[in-house]
Every structure is written in structure tokens, then in C-alpha cells.
Amino acid sequence: MSQNKQHIFSGRIIKLEVEQVELPNGTTAELEIVRHPGGAAVVAINDNSQVCLLKQYRYAVDQWVWELPAGKIDNQEPPLETAHRELEEEAGVQATFWHELGAMISSPGVFDELVYLYLAKELKLVEQQPEEHEVFELHWVDFVEALNWSVTGKINDAKTVIALFRASQYLASVEEKNNS
Image (cartoon, rainbow, N blue to C red; front, side, top):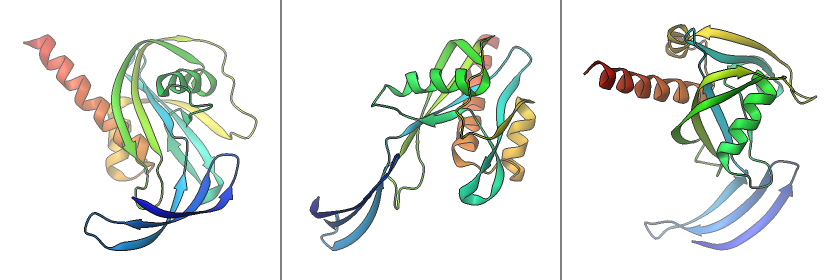
């Protein structure tokens, strides 16, 4: 439970607070917490078993990063609405089939951000509308190859790795049920 909260910074996306807290073991600690509205990411798989990946330039790490279509929750919208919006804007597709893959915590030592993960299938093309500040290349990669990239480290974005493996487990369980 927070005993004392000091607001340090508010930006377009995040807030930084320093909080004096009592931990479950009874000790007191001063923690720096980054408050984030959360986000959603989508494993979009087409009829050819290819997954949509963005090769996106990320200034914070000064490199091109392989990622799923994803974005932050705007105006407290439901995470699934964020997923729909980001899939259209970044990948230029809409999906008829959606399956929730759960949420992931990006960095629980300092962030309160939750990223909600989804599987999308039965895709149809729509107009792609990336935001002006987004710099990326759109790729459709064989799903098994993308999983291998996650194993080898070619994909090192946490939300993407987690979502791909959760999607693979879900798809394997559906296939197993269909073969029973």
C-alpha cells in the first residue's frame, strides 16, 4: 500500500511517480513507478499460415525490431478495440476471428503496463493507415519461421515472443481437438 506518492513527470504517454510503499514482508521501500495506459498486440495469421510482422525502427534501443502490430490503449478504450485499430492501421487488415491470449507485464520492476495479446484469423485487406511517427516495413512471415526467430533471438521483443508462443499453443490445442 502506498504511503506517500510524489509525481515527478507527465508526458504524452507515461507518468513517473516515486512512491513510499510498504511491501508484503513489512519493509518500506521507495520505488520509481512508470504509469502507462497499457497496450494490445495481435498475432494475425493469414490463410497461408503467415504471421504479420513489422520490422520497426525503435529509437530508444537504436535498432530495427521485429514486432507484431501493436499499440497503446487510447482514452481507456477496451484492449480488443485497441487491437482491432492497430491491426487495421499498421497491417492493413481486419479479422473475423479473434481469440484472447491473455496479458503480459512488460517490466514489472518499474512499469505498470499490461499488454493484452490476441490471435486474429480470417483476414481481409483494408487500407493501411500508419501513424506519421511510425517507421516500419510490413512483412508476412511463415508462422513456424517466426517461432524459430523467437528461439534464435532474431525476434527479441518480449510481447511478440510471448504472443507467438501462446498462439502456437492455442493453435496446437485446436488442431489436436479437431484430430480427435
